Image (cartoon, rainbow, N blue to C red):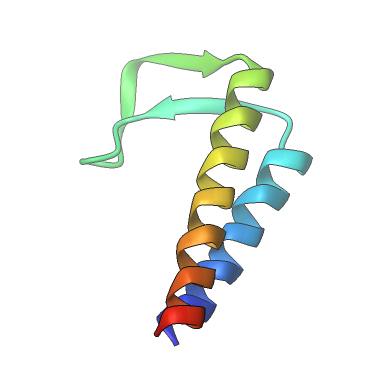
Length: 67
């Protein structure tokens, strides 16, 4: 169940990396934007999204295969 969810979320992260046009840095703990908005370069946002998506897919497949 969780492995399937991780694979789906990984696919969504990769889709976000492909189709998003702007990427912004936000505070991950409080989910508030920084006082000074920081726009990330597009290549960096896409790289982060793709790496996170591939990692989620890899962990999800490992959970599905090895239980």
